[in-house]
Image 1 (cartoon, rainbow, N blue to C red):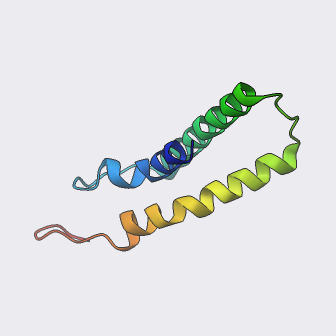
Image 2 (image 1 turned 90 degrees about the horizontal axis):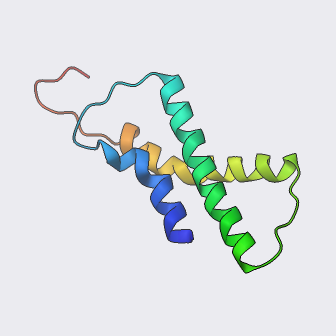
Amino acid sequence: MAIAAVLLLSYPGWRFRRVAVEKPFLARLIEVLVLYLMVGTLGFAFEANIGNPFQQGWEFYAITLSLYLVLAYPGFVLRYLLRRHHAGRKA
């Protein structure tokens, strides 16, 4: 479960590492939310498999989304803040 979560968190950062990708903010936001839903679905499936699933309120989802964004930040730093500029390309 933890390995799957780490792979999904790092997916946007390493998917197009060598290729310059121009996506609008909305596309990136949707990508993060879809991956958050995938991690949540895996978590709920795991919880249902080992026993009775617990009811969750809005606080749970707010905290897990915040935690997801915090854990995704290193991928953002590697992808956008520490990227190498290629010769011949305007930055």
